[in-house]
Image (cartoon, rainbow, N blue to C red; front, side, top):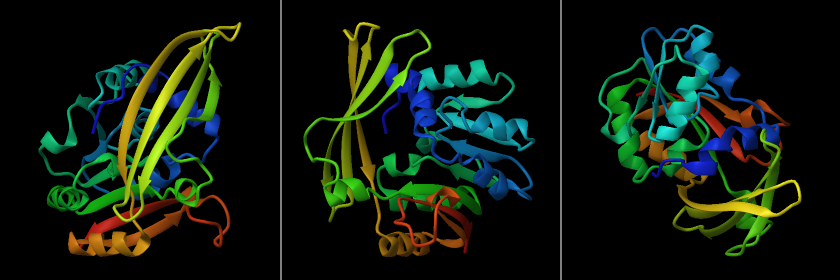
Length: 243
């Protein structure tokens, strides 16, 4: 798992806001209710979710590998504790562990990670996505396509282009992102590229993996609680407890 740097870190929250997707704050808040003791937020980023949850009174510690994201979090929420460290090297036991926003899918060896999580806590919050658009061909494979754009506070425009390769049988999705800053005249000021390697799971495979690693599902929320029951499920959130 690589750390977010440059435009990927600086523009991360702006892209989330532009999507106008439902926030996970309410779901995490519900999950953390009645969890006595300290909880860990893995991949806490800029504090976008961590800050409001900590300010709401939850005893929550952030863990983030990107120095740039840690700096943003400490600037926005100076009273909220964030450690600059990878979860794989982090030691400690917690009342619960929170891994929202698809962070878990960036980890290598999901079975080992779930086993290690089970050693550290009895309660786990997990949000995962399934890449229907990539699998169905709605998004072109192995070629650059326009993803989205944002207006930057400095007056420039930030654009995101994406290119992906997907292997359905292996449950592997590799995304390349190209971040482009343009000035008011539309001229390119700077470009940056990053790579994400993600894993995804069918419903059956995931539930078998959870059972194998000592987890049972306490609650399952589809599409962050937004939409109808018969909608295609792009995102699934789990409240898990140890068996």
